[in-house]
Amino acid sequence: MPITRAQKAELIESYKAIIEGSTAIVVADYRGLTVAQMEALRRSLRETGSRFLIAKKTLMRRALQEMDRPIPEDAMVGPVGFAFLGEDIGASAKALQSFAKESGGLFNILGGLLGDTVLDADAAKSLANLPTREVQLAQLVGAIVGPLTSMAGLLTAPHRDIVGLLQARIDKEGGAEAA
Image (cartoon, rainbow, N blue to C red; front, side, top):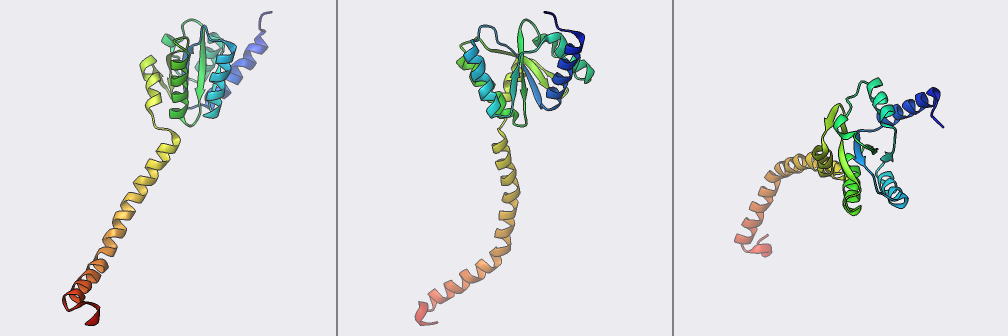
């Protein structure tokens, strides 16, 4: 039974809501995957705050057009699925990349969309090289704490030097008995 216009409009609105809530979209060829493999992919993406959706390409194009977003036309060839990546792009892309390796060539990343930039297959795969959210937070903390530690060392250096000089003088004069 064909989809009615009202149903198509509802699907487009739901796609727009998903697109709005994602930081990146990866388009992939999923032909040949079993239902169990698809569930494993969806489960691994769900753990990273992302989701995988098989959508009608014409409706996805329409949703992207209505949102004034570019369309990754080169990637939208044949039956494709869309991975909507959440806040942690690095972890989600790593999950996609590892699933692609585990699938034995059945799951292929074709391209994607990062913000308003269309990504080819290589650029979409390179998203997996981004650090995860935890690593980024650790780098941020390191960048903040590093200068503060240096400054604390500089502020305590004169006191430490005076104590060192006094200790050297005590040692030279005969140690604790002289004191």
